[in-house]
Length: 69
Image 1 (cartoon, helix red, strand yellow):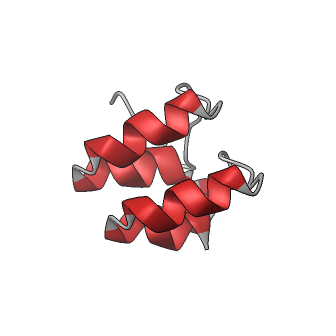
Image 2: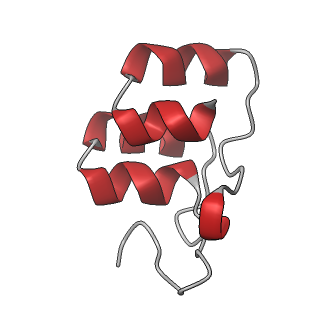
């Protein structure tokens, strides 16, 4: 749910899930974290929210992509 909400730009849902202790680094398809997906899609408000809740900025997907590159 967190990955989908991050992908689709649903800030309120991301906040709700994180407030209920959703794991911010849960890997999805190709081991891509919600943070990487949000950054790739330009959802920077979600990126900020995930980082404030402990998301790993260095998390990589299977291709080595991170939120920063």
